Each structure stands twice: as C-alpha cells, then as structure tokens.
Length: 428
Image (cartoon, rainbow, N blue to C red; front, side, top):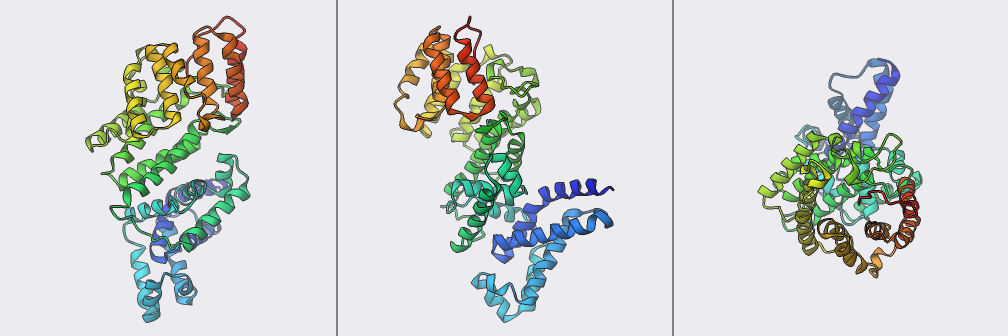
C-alpha cells in the first residue's frame, strides 16, 4: 500500500478508534490529558511502523495494545504515581505489579460505559461552552486542533489554548470519570446534548465564512448523537436530538446549488431530500415519543422538522400543526428565537400580517438586537405584503449583521429585488 494510502487509512482508523483508546485509558488513569497523550503516542508509533509493516488486520486492537503497553511502562517506571488519583496511588504503593495487571485487564473490558463517561467529562459544565465543543471534537471526534480551528474559523492557537485549559480545569476540579448519579443526570445530559446540537447547527448554517454549510460538522454531530443513543437508549431526549439532526441533515444536498449559493427551504427540490435519513429521523422521533419524550425540546423541534419532511410539496406543509408545536416549545423553553420562529410559522398558516404583528413585538428585545434573522424575517414579511420600500432596509440591515458571506449575498440580493417586480420569496 502506498504511503499516502497508509496515512489516509491511519487517519480514518484514528477517527474511529481514538475515543475508545482515550476512554479506556482515562478510566484507569483518571487523567484525560494523560490518556490523550498515551493515545497520541500509539498513533505516532503507527505512523512510524505501518507505512513499512503494513496496516494490521485489526488496527484498533493494535492501537489499544500499543497504548496499553505505554500505560504499563509508565506504571512500572513509577512516573504515573504522581498523576494518579489518591485511590489508585494507594493501590500502587501497596502492590505496583498488582496494579499493572489491573490496568492490563481493565483496558480489555467493554468500553461502552467508558465512552459515555468520556462524553460527560468533555461536556462537563465546569468548562465554558466553547471549551466543551473543542474538547468534544478533539476527544470524541478525533479531529486535530487545526481541523477544529478551521471548522469554527478560529485561530489555531485559540483552540489549542481552549483544549489545554479545559484539561487543566477538569484536573483541578478533580472531575470524576463516571456517569452522573440519577439526580444529576438530566442536567449533565442536557449539556452533552447541547454541545452536540451546537456542533450540528454550526455545520448546518455556518455563522461565518465563505460557505453556507460545513458538512463535516453535521456528520460529526450525527455520529456523536448516534453513539450517545446507543449508550443511553432509554433517554428520550437523546433520541429526540438524533431525530432532529437526521431529518435536518436529509436536506443537506438541496440547501445549496452547484455554485454553493443558498437555496431556501420552500424553494428546495424535495426529490433531493435523503429519504433514508428521513426514515431514520422519523423512527428516532417515534422512539422518543414511545419513551414518553414527545414534549421534550428536541423532540418538539424534530416534530416540526418532520412536518416538512412529510410534505411532498411545499404547499402541502401543515403550517397550522407547526404553529401548535412552536407554541408548545415556547411554553417549555421560552426564548425570543423560538418566538421568532413561531412568527414565521404563523405567517405561513394565517398570513404575513399575523406574523408581522408577532415580529414587531420582538424588535425591542435586547437579545435580538444584533440577530440578523430578526430583520431577515421582518423584511420577508414586508416583502410578501408588497411593502418593498420598508423591506429593503430590513434586508440590508440583516446583511450587515451576518458574518456568513453566502448569506450576506443572499440578503443583499433580496434587498435589490425590492426595487424590481417581486419574485416568490420564502423564509429560511
């Protein structure tokens, strides 16, 4: 196998296996930073040996064995004693060889629980949201610092600092490597779900840069979501989030044209929607509902997405049902953004005048002062009412607020359209 092919294979194996390596090592070492360091050591050995020896038949097991040996070597040299938690240090001081055998045996155990523990560590509330995202993509996604920085359009040193500080914060706080107790689980699970959804949203509608979408982030969030529901199959909101992401992701290929320009929801070619992802999403939503989670925030958003997925044409969309779902979501998780989305649904179900009344009530909301979708929606409603002179400055203001180049071009195009014979325009 040519060296370049070998390196691509190593990269693919690392993306799949690194969470398992890091999770297994963290369980025994109680130090996520050291666990990642040992996993990286195994990767370096693979990069050195595989181009000449060939990729092993079971590359994941090879990496695990190599990482395991590194961990045992550190134990035997005594260098790990200073970095272990108190309990394991006592064990090692009493019988180091016995501890070595425990490490070796433990690293061969099933790792489902370890991955779940690693998710809860990477998304721990002691960290900032930005740090949780960076650490999750690094530890569970196998992305490099450079890849994370590029995905979020942040300087690489900034991401590197976030990751280093996150590991230090976890160590200083002595965050245990465990699944939270029953009373703590909802809040901690909410943090995990929130991080995964934040990653997905950044991929689905990039906040900045030259591209409307960043598919890699959508795919990574979907992968993490699917792993999570496999680890907590009785958690309805985990299924609700996966349902939402599956259905949203089904539209990916229809959201941009060949030139990368955005295509708005009601103008998309629904024949291009991925029916397999839709079926998977609807099945996940059904699962969430059967678990009693129909009224969870992610399940409600998934139900809204399902209304679009079930409509064969844009005209078939059940906007009345969508307004009802948004009303329920607003009661459960009230926010100005939910109200803005509800206003769009109301305008589609009952006309732009009804929607504009709701939007106008949000114009004084401080949290939406620099939110580009507020003037976007208001401009659209004014456009639909034929009030083009009022719509144009709204689109121009929205264009000035967005940091995404594709979205800016779209909004400026809509502003220019206000001076021409109006074409059919649809909300995002």
